Image 1 (cartoon, rainbow, N blue to C red):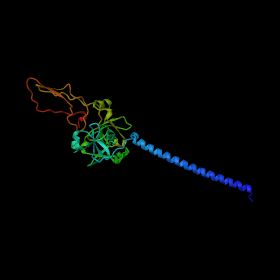
Image 2: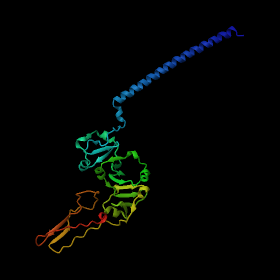
Image 3: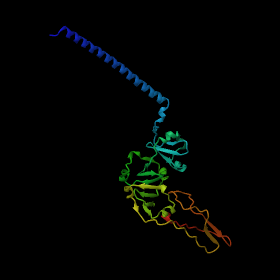
Length: 293
């Protein structure tokens, strides 16, 4: 049996619960409105920051260009885009031989140009061989296994014209990763080890041109004879009288000429006639050292 007093207490308790429930609902609505307002302010702030130029602090996104697009920035360098990567067109001759049109060059900001990745894997449209570019030299990756051993991306190969491909010289100096040996590559893709550092430097090479390859790629080369000294200096040809021949004092020092280069000065000689005029009917130049291939 419930007394009148207990009934009153129950009614009071019920009333307090209803009041607390209403207060909680009211606070919940206020909290929701505050959160909505905060989100609105944050969105508006982000929009204002974006429009005010704060977005310029974000990395530039590379534009998408059609294959064959010719680009240049503030310098005179010209680039050709393929597969959304750029490769340098290294001379006017390469540009013309590739069949490019000078009026088709698109000038962009340096920021936009730099946003386009530079290709380090190239091939031509008519040859499946893939070449890797490093230190402005090219080298052919001789197999799929070698390509994969570097964890390279098959989707990051840029197709270039044959003149652009030919404008890159083959890397001349190699070193196996983890080994101190230095090797010169000949035109037959055979490596020849320099036995001393003096032999390396006296042949006109510098370590800045050195290409380090992994064991997989190094194993694709044949190994030839070693290089023990600098190229020998040609002796002055003997004459029967009336004409002397000697190296000029300003003859170029020993150096390295890139493959397929032309008009590279390598020797200057002085011809001196005595006792009257002399007629020269022929001149024979003997190639020695690393050039003797």
